[in-house]
Each structure stands twice: as structure tokens, then as C-alpha cells.
Image (cartoon, rainbow over all chains, first blue to last red; front, side, top):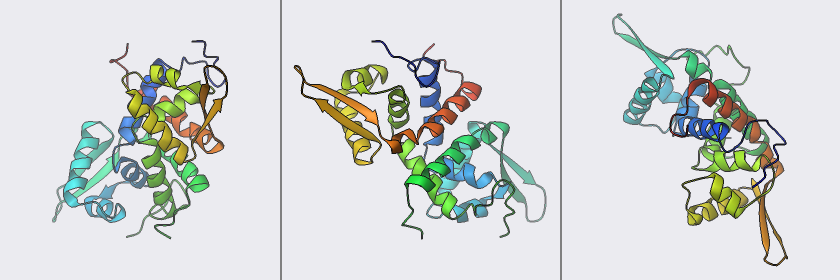
Length: 118
Length: 118
């Protein structure tokens, strides 16, 4: 099967495919794109993330944040104040997702008019 | 809740969030990123897509292609040859997904060494 590479020199069925598939799995996980998008503006508290991901349950948000921490995308910082303050922040790896999120936003603006919010 | 927009002028919780969420749903659907990535090189037959998405069943591939057609991302062309030839191709909307796929590939190459294929 000859596949003339018109867009890229990378063989589409090998390293490129693998990288795309693995990234799609991360960024396609429910709530991940929204959380990374939200955290792109800076550190956020749990309650702020809960507010911007409207519809998410506290239990699901906690689970998603733990998964993103385990994947090295989000860091959790707790400050010994009274009451204790906990904030979530993107790691360098998390920041590297932002070009994907930006491209998603551009695509959405061009092709997906959002009727359900506005 | 004051949210200083350091990265963008767009209010992150409104149109941007909606566009990101809607795009993430499309591109996060199982196999979509791989199929779009594969079709980025040009029209493909069913058997070629089946081959490059190793692990996909013919039934799932047919279902995914119908869904992508319904979403206006893929076009199906059949040519009245003998035996009949059917090819799948990205639409303009489908081509607009390529910056997302490219960003996914870059992220994957940088952060996700692919041990399971190589």
C-alpha cells in the first residue's frame, strides 16, 4: 500500500499514529480539556473548577484531578492557612497541552456554533 | 471571582469553554483522531483504514465512519467500477481538525514515549 506523504514526512502509521492516539486518549477523557483550559489562566481552587465545569459532581471533579495529577498534568498545592487553601496548577507537561486546547477552541468557534449556552 | 486573563482576551468560562468542550467531544471520540490523522494524507479505502487502525473491528469502523459522515467531517465517495470502489475523504470541516491532530502529535512526541508499538 503506497501512501504518498503530502502533508508530512512522518510515516502516518507509525510514531505519528501512536503519538496522536496516546494524546487523544489524554485530552479526550471527559472534562480534561475543560479543566486544562480553565487552568490555563492560572492556579485555581477546587470550588472555582467546580463552578466553571458546571454539571460536574464534586466526586467526579476530585477523581479527575487525581487522575491528572497522576498523569503529571496538574499539580496540587496546599497552603497551611486557616482555613487551609488548596490550589491546582498546570505542570510544564500540562502547559504543553495548551496548543491542542487552543486548536480545539479555534475549531469550535469556526465550525460548532454553541447553541446550548448562548 | 476575578479571573485575570493572562493568556487570552476570551472569557474562559463562556464561548471559549463551550467551543473547547464541543471540540473535545468530537476529537476525543474513540478512533476519531486516528482516522482523521490517517485521512490527512488523502482519500482512503475501508480496508486501508481498517489496516491502519489496527485493533478496530469492521463493524466499529463502519459505525465510526457513518458518525463522521453525519458530523460532516468525512465524505464517502463510491465509484461505479467493477468491483465497486469506495473511498473516504476529509471535508473542509475535517481538514480544520488537522491543527488539533498536529498539536496532539507534537505533544505525544514530546511527552509520551510510545512503548507499546515500538
